[in-house]
Amino acid sequence: MTTAPHPAVRPSGPGRTAAVLAVAAALLLTTVLLGLAVGSHHEPVRTVIDVVARRLGLGDPHVTLLDDQIVWQLRLPRVLGAAATGAGLAVCGAVLQTLTGNDLADPFLLGISDGAAAGAVTVIVLGVGVSGAVGTGAVATAAFAGALLAAVVVLALAGARTRSLPTTRTVLAGIAVGQMCGAYTSFVVLVLGDRDAARGVMEWTLGSVAGVRWPTAVFLTAVALAGVTVLASSARDLDAFAFGETAARSLGVHVERTRWVLVATAALVTACLVAHTGVIGFLGLVVPHVVRLLCGPRHALLLPVSALVGASLLVGSDIVARSLLPDREIPVGVITAGLGAPFFAWLLWRQGRADGSGL
Image (cartoon, rainbow, N blue to C red):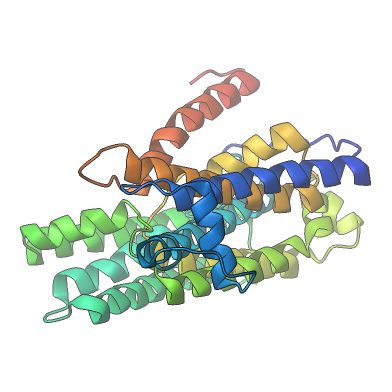
């Protein structure tokens, strides 16, 4: 297991913090406007602003019914869903990397993605007669149940007898549960499924926000806001964890209780997001590292900036996913994997050099 290096806390005054947050917020606003404007039917930015202003009651600019349908009904919930998912996964990744002391940790470390896939596959392959909106809701519900069950089993295995969550045992429990879920998924698809079912499973596991509409967008936004708020409220405790458990205890942190609460929160948030968007990998791995390089390790700044950058990255990735090819849409998980895999390789190479052992 790779251990996070001993952090050096950089001084950060209120002015610098406000400037960093302002830049990250401006980046998100820019990508949101692009997400509303760019697509198979391009909308001028001015038209996008007029549609949103009219819907919010900020005047009565002239917009066509087609513009309103494209911007407000189709693209805005999709953009909001992508932003919420990106923000939630990025913050959960930052928290799990600190709690486990592992640079390579991400929100799927606890077997959550494999559990969600197992639940989704159960409905996609075995859900006889389930289709349309009911089928979409059933897949999301089953994925959430599978992700939550996987997280509960991991936490139970890791905390058995000791009622604590030792880092190594938590990671190993996540790997074990992920493998079991993966074996179940493969069995169901290969033995009980057909070609159409296998295609549906592959599309879900590659991740997408194409089907997000207003009810789902509101739910994802609420989950992300609540999760980020809860996790960010423990910024001081996370700063203490960054120096190791011994240092955290010496600073008055209840290590076991804090780890339980934060890991369970991260698992729940990830389960809710993955259930509706599928498996979108590498966001929770890449974004926290990029933000640490730019802003330092202080969680009071790291977590909100990670949320803003994660939201921007997934909205931007979705723009590429639906614009790269003229006649089809690429799953957004393919774009994030294309961005994240080289960074993952670089991170492994850097850690190998730091350990003096190579790869």
